[in-house]
Length: 370
Image 1: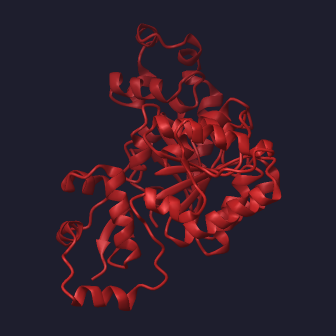
Image 2: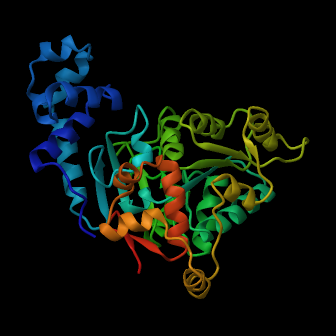
Image 3: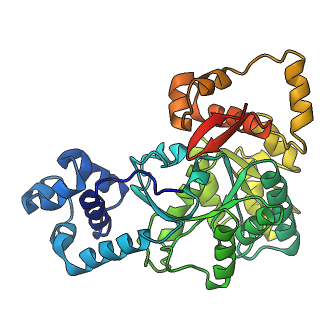
């Protein structure tokens, strides 16, 4: 597929330089673009203009450093390779659910298919030191969810994350791994092969960090907001009360996403985090149908053609979204505007129609299939 629409080459290079400055996070990045109109103008502005915005001196001084320029040049070379993308916050392929966050990443690196990020996703997270039953449970749920049309999203960590990615792949599904490192610095290295397989089998690796960013403890909790922000809901399979998975679950609740937790034995330390989430309002899950029902009754569809055609022949009412799509293909975001539906509800209906074989997604736009 072609690269998504991007800013001009000069503006893209300026955004990459701005993104590489010390102490410039998502909010400051967007503030600079709002005030100056573009990254190019922000980089050219005098130092006192940055100071008047309360920006750190270290960022202003680093604007013209060789390191920042070299980092941007390396990123541009990386983007020349097939299957490697950079989604800016104003890009049409930028995932709409993630864009709702106040601190949504201004730049999102993607290796693989960026169109996946607009498809309905269910995040699965849990302990790195998971039990064998926990790993088996994660893989089983991932197989069912992927088979039901969901993209399974997780963090490529050892334990539950890895089991979730593998479970989705086992049934020919697709999965997204959100990294807490740059895409050229995979962590843990034990999952380098899994990362390659995710991309090779139609999935994607995602990171907001510069390509060469190494593992740093503070980056992993921050990446959790992306895991939950991309997803309609988060399923915690097995976790201790101190697990980072609980951070993901709480971020999901703050973002208005569904939170699910699988209970376990009161004697198993790995169940205590899930039990805590359930006490705080997470939905208790025993089977995958519990999740499908909570997410507006989505169901797996083992066969599509004959039953669907029969329903149409019997005078099935036309779906209002089909009328909009017959007029012209539209992105999820455009459909939300034209239909007046909240985005989560819209995505639920689109998934049902896709599973029915009545619509498909082509280059980020939904189209009728007949």
